[in-house]
Length: 381
Image 1 (cartoon, one colour):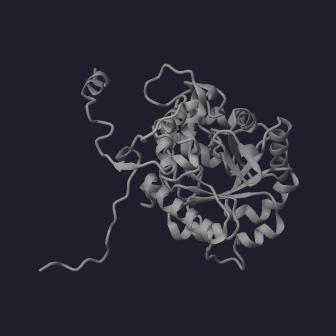
Image 2 (tube, rainbow, N blue to C red):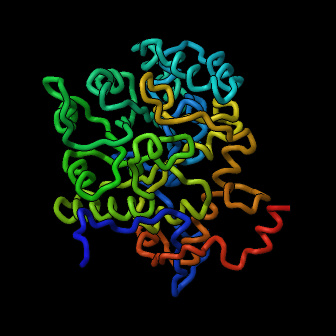
Image 3 (cartoon, rainbow, N blue to C red):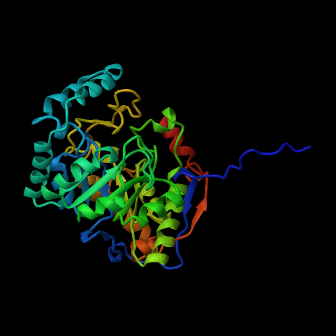
């Protein structure tokens, strides 16, 4: 007798379990177009840097803009609590593993300062860059008007999981429709992983949606909370919501896969799964331009009661230029990410990101191990 089932589980896939199928036609990589649109803003490459204190400061945001991408500054981090957070960043970098989290928790106890919120935006704008800043839903109503008044171009409202409907003890929680009555700059919202939640968020009028719960190198939400969906499946589901919303509204809302992306192959798989762009943290934290001094930590690491991140050592081993465009002598796919994307698009005959989204993808759990015995032997020696 077969026991009745309480739940049906479906298979979900991450980067290492799938592969992209080459196309019937190939084109030269220099012929592909990689543009991304967020509201009225155009970006030459579909790459964003995560709003994390070890990744983005005003100078990094300016450098990322000059490279053709976008970097979001965390407005609830050390850059808006301290006039000069250099000593805090040095202390975090010098701490041992056991001390790091408590040091971060202490560093984030100082209150957020309105004057520093405005100053950081002004610093980014003074460098000629598009100013994108990130806040959590809890602080959105407080800071959104200030952010717009200070001249920010894009507001990112981001938490581990964000939905269009949220219940709380407050008289009136954050409602995106009402937020858009008070500010006019594009709002990017995240993070989501499912069709229904993404569709509901898009219907509120957001400019883009971030996809991914818990895959980041410094995030421990999956261990602490048990919550998350592997990025390939999450991206496919959210892309389906984008297509459904486009059919019903005629408005195209980009989705941005956020977290767990390490190599050019990961970037390519995100796009084929349906993403319009990717957001990355740890690859940029390892650049000489990043402020983290070779370390990286998740946004929820300093949480006073339930940290859901950890400080990880990524080293200072590359530059922003090499990470994005090369040239490189590395063979592991961690540099020249844009070159990898162009090459893969050419192999699939895709002239644009939207065409690349239509490339075939297969389930391939042996994609990284098949025929690679000599590489493994070399790595072990």
